[in-house]
Length: 610
Image 1 (cartoon, rainbow, N blue to C red):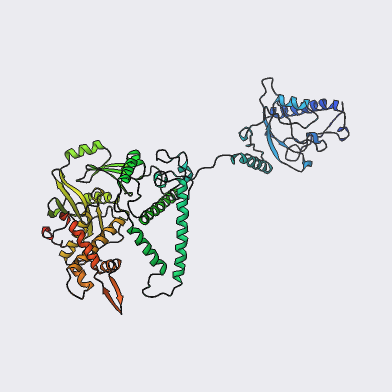
Image 2: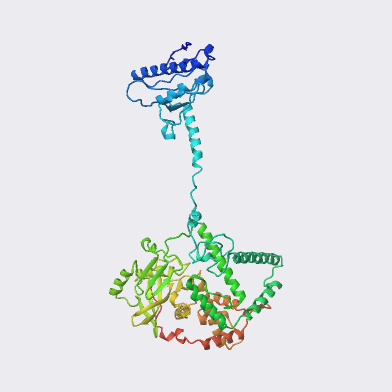
C-alpha cells in the first residue's frame, strides 16, 4: 500500500494551514488501492477530530485537501467516533482547496452511513446522499461563528435559488379580481356573461345584466357599436361647427335643424295607447318574471325617447362598473339599504353618515315623529309604545285641511334637526349639512290623520343669508313624490320671501329632481303672470317683485321656453299663446286644488334678532 505524506503545519494564529495531501507520484495508481486509501484517510480524519473534541478548544478552521488530487478537493467527509454511543451527526465548515481559487465555505451534515458509502464509491467524487441530505434551508446551519464573507455569498446564492420557487405562488388578487372571484349575477337564470354596455365580457350586478333588461349579450354589443358610431358623427359635426365664424347669436346649423325635425316627426308617431294584445303581453311578462326582469318598455313612448333612456342606462352602468374596478363600491359596504319609516319601507339612494354601529346594519328603523333611529323592530315597537311625539317640535305656522307646516329652530331643537338632515342625506346627493344646524330654520310639512302628523317633506333656510337664499335644502319623502307636494314646498318658500319683502332663490347645486321641480314651478309662475298681464311693455324687474323670483331664474326660464329674443338691439319677451293655452288646459284638468298654498292660512312674521 502506498504511503502518503502528512504535512501538519500550523499558521501563526494557531489555525491549521494544510491538511492531508496526496503524493503526486501515486495519484495514478490502480483502482484496487482506492478503497484502502479512502479508509486510511477517513481513519486519520476521525482520529484528528476526536482529539480536537477532547481538548474542548474553540472550533478551528478545518484542513483542506491538497490541490494535487481533484478527486477529494471538493468536500470533506467527517465522522465523529468519540464514543461508543449512537453517533450524532455534527456539522463542520468545509473549505475548498486554495488551488481551486475559491474560499467558499458551507456546512454539510454527514453520518457514518454516508462515510461508508463514500468509501465504497472511489471512482467518483463523494456526493451527499439523498437520504440524509438537507431538504431545505432550515436543515443547514448557517450560524457558525467562523462564517466568512464567502459563506455569506453562498447563502445569498442559495436564497436566490429558493426564491425561484416562490414565483410559482399565486399572486395576490387586486380588488376587482377579488370582487369577481366566486361571484355571479343575482338575476335568476343568468350566467353572468355579457354586459349591458357591450364593452365587458362578464357582469356581476343587475345594473349590467342584459337578461334583466330583456336583451342578449350580442344585442348589447350591437347597441354599443351603434352608440360609438353616433358619438363619432357628433364629434365630427362639432368640429365643423367650431370652424364657423363665431357670432353673438348663432343660428342652428342645417344638421341640427334636420335632426330637430326628425325628432319632432318621430314623437308625433307615438302611439296614443297600448292595444289589448300589448297589454296582455305586458301583464303576462309581469306575472312570469315579477321584479326579476325590467318591465317591457316598447310602445310606451316614442322610439327616440326610449333610445335616450337606453343610452342613459348604459352610461350609468358603465360608471358603476368603473367605480367597482376602482374599489369605491364594495359588497357589504357601510351603506344603509332600506329604512322602516312608519307604514313604509323605503329604499335609500345615497350614503348618509350615520354612526358606524348603525350604518353597517343595512336596515334602519325610525320613529316617524321624533326621527330617532334604532337597530331592530323590537326596539322600535317599544319606543313607539312610549313615544309622546305626534308632530314635529316648533311652531305650527300654516294649516289648511290636513296639511300643516311647522317652523323648527335648529338651535332650540338640535337633535331633531340633526336626525332630519341624516334622513334627508339618504335621498340627496349634494347635501353637506348634517350636524351644524344652529344657523338654520327648518320648515316641515306634514299631513295629519288620527295617528298624528306624518312627515311629507321639508326645506331649510339660513337665518341670515348674505345672498338672499330662501332655500338651502329641500326634500320630499319618496312615498309622497309626484303628488304635487314638492311644488307646495317651493311655493311656500316664495310665500315667506313675499312676506319678508325679499327676492329669493334656491341655493345651488340643486339635485336632479329638485332642478326639475324648480323649472316646472318657474314656468308655471311666468305663464300665470303673462296670462294675467294686459300691458304692452313688460319688465323683468316687475315680474321679480311680483313673484319674488330672482331675475336670473326668470331669464333662464324665458330662454328655456324660447320666449326671450334679441332684435334690433333690444330684448323682447314673446308672449307665446300656445304655451299659455296648454298651461290653462292643464290647470283645468288638475283635480288636486287642495295642493295650492293659501296665503291667508299663513300665521307667521319674520323672525327678529336671529
